[in-house]
Amino acid sequence: MLVSFAESIVDSSLTQWIQGTYWLWPVMEITHFIGLTLLLGGLIVIDLRMAGFMRSIDPATTHKLLPAVIFGFSLNLITGILFFYGDPMRYAINIGFQIKMVLVLIAGINAALYHFKVDPLLRTMDRNLASPIVAKLVAFTSLGAWTGVLLLGRLIPYVGTG
Image (cartoon, rainbow, N blue to C red; front, top):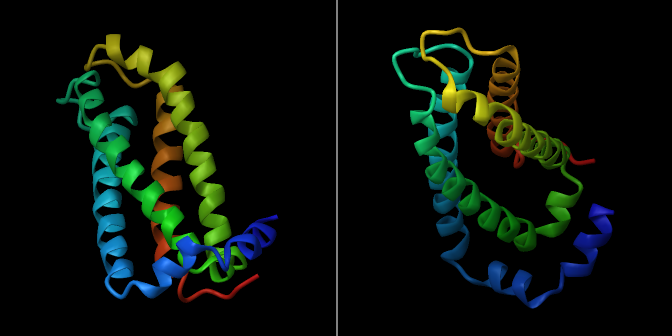
């Protein structure tokens, strides 16, 4: 399915523009890195607090980091789509990219669990109490998934394909 989509866009004007614009790929790399910094920087604080660390921070206060996290994810989503369009056949068959996308999906499902189940608990939680088990599970899943996304994204140029 991914290969079929890649074949359908390989000759698109967007692909040609990305490949033909000398300065665009480095700018996208820098933007992707900034997005990843915002995303992971905020999530590390949120997730570690949810996991029960840094108890001096009010759990509800970590919620204020979410706009930076969402902005970082948005930057990565846009640049990630442009990367795929820029070299669709390479990404479509790359095992590192494929696993990375599965981890992004897991992280998204985990974020929904956070939004609907954990966030309401944290808003009213006493900072001196231990974090609920569901919060710890969501926190460690998030940390693991996003660490995997980071590592696999870095490995895409180096791992085998298919």
